[in-house]
Length: 74
Image (cartoon, rainbow, N blue to C red; front, side, top):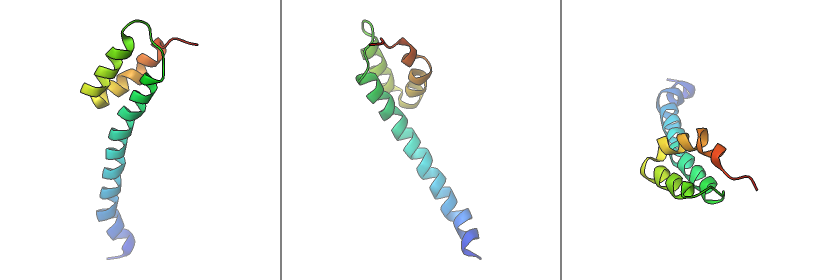
């Protein structure tokens, strides 16, 4: 078996798994940083932090799709 075949079948799956895990960890972290460094009206900041903490992946995706538009522009 060649080195490329070995890497594709065994190392490639590991590499994809590492990217997925990194994405699942980094997305909520980036969303939390964005929420905490932005200003929102009323209790929106607390709401987004709780959503991201309790539903990390879904909350992050929702924040980037919906929540970023609700920030107060300085």
